[in-house]
Length: 79
Image 1 (cartoon, rainbow, N blue to C red):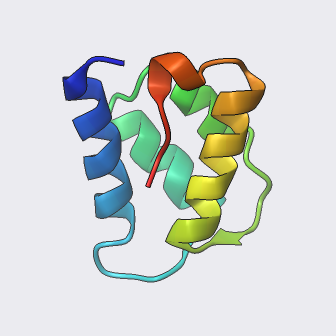
Image 2 (cartoon, rainbow, N blue to C red):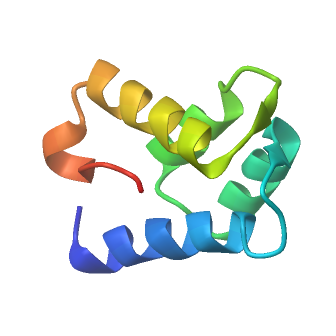
């Protein structure tokens, strides 16, 4: 992932948790679409289980999906 994309993902996560400690799956999906994340990351967001996420839990879910899709070399990890 180019540096700009890594920064975009970091800003995406920061924006989700700027004013709250928990977000819903719907919050994540809508924000992923508005941030114009790479399509594969939007698909990961759309396939998240419908639960409430803390930042740590959401990062774990994204990282698991990225690794599971064999994309860790391309996308790295989410904090």
